[in-house]
Amino acid sequence: MNHPVKIKNALISVYYKDGLEPLIRQLHSLGVTFYSTGGTESFIRDLGFDVVRVEDLTGYPSILGGRVKTLHPKVFGGILSRRNLEEDKAQAAQYEIPEIDLVIVDLYPFEETVKAGLGEDEIIEKIDIGGISLIRAAAKNFNDVVILSSKNDYAELHHILEENQGATSLEHRKAFAKKAFNTSSHYDTAIFNYFNQEDPLPVFKVSEQKSTVLRYGENPHQKGYFYGDLDAMFTKLNGKELSYNNLVDVDAAVALIDEFTEPTFAILKHTNACGVASKDNLLDAWKVALACDPVSAFGGVIICNGEVDGETAREISNLFFEVLIAPAFSEKAIEILTEKKNRILLQRKPVALPGKSFKTLLNGVIEQDKDATIEGPDQMTPVTEVKPTPEQLQDLHFANKLVKHTKSNTIVLAKDGQLLSSGVGQTSRVDALVQALEKAKTFGFDVKGAVMTSDAFFPFPDCVEIAANAGIKAILQPGGSIKDKLSIDMANSKGVAMVTTGVRHFKH
Image 1: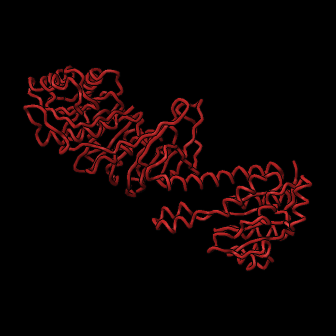
Image 2: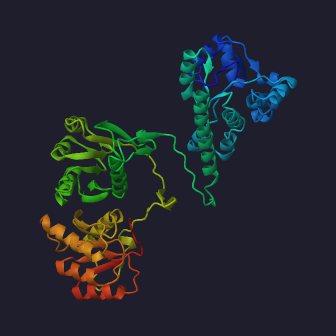
Image 3: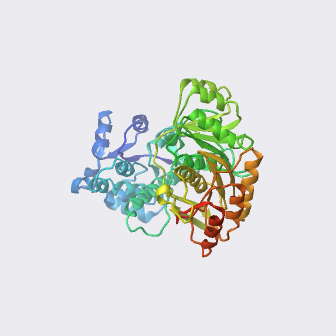
């Protein structure tokens, strides 16, 4: 064993005591002397074991309402003393400082207190000072000291001591130190982000403790990980593990469906909607959404905003799909949909989502506020002689939601609460429109009387002319081009209604 150290003295002071008893009993059987404070001291005594109070070691009581208990040279000297240096050993002997070989400390529940919505005074009192200092000191001196900063590590140390007659190796101690610095850095990040809400400093700090190893990344030769708590977001009712690509599509699906309150189904492929419909009930919405593009729907990610019943499940079951997401499923729906074991069924939970998004870029990270704006009829300004009808305004609102969640450059064609087609991710807005018209034709849709939305303004009147000639009767665009008048004039000459919103929805 590399530099084995047997534990003689242990400082133990924890907020959460569940799972601690077996380790305390093991340490006692190994002849370890316990040093402790407060509730942990009482916990150890109640198990029938002797404990040296930290107050007796330092000669100072816990003061300032418990803010200062362990901050003393006799505690930190015992943790930080270097056992291989004669000078350190001499000073420890001179000041009667015991060598502390094991520190078991956790931290006040700062994040939990913030989440509980308690007042600032209570939140501030949950900023741990002594605990975080003990963790850092013990982790720094991993050459001689074991640090446990989480109850999740109790069983691991128990096993190590059992296998190695009460000793730990340098590798063991360094591994625990790594976990400890993860604990301290995460804790400090949470505190900083709490303080950095008003007039924030322009810095990027994120710490996510939960992770999932994915089968692979976008392609099998790439490693993939998800950092976050999927269990807080979904209950998985069936199917294989989610892949990297599944998660990207699921994220896009959730963002899209949250735009709708009426019964709506959406089908997505590669983050873009290939079928969306809002109807009076979910069964009709499913049938109409699937009709948008049944070819692309194959192998897609499906999402809705209501309970999937047995009849709807039976219809969905006719399609091969990767993932189905809903806020609820009837028992009959689950019975039908779980007949195939690989189908991923996710029941969504009501969890608040972050208001910002970020990704790695070049040699750094790019961050932005999420696009939380969507313009309804009240934000649509008519700019043509012909005004849109109430039905057209409703369809423009529907289509505007889809444009917002479709890769730029994009054009969306819609009618009667149904996506007819879209032009996705084109380098030219004309190409996007031509693609949308061709796709609508392929699946037998008559675009006469339909509406068209664009994610950005028209620099030229060509799109308006092409759309009008195809039978489009109402157009939504942000406006803002120096050549807006050319597009407006074209719409007027063709008898087409046009509205502007003043808001662009690029999605790159």
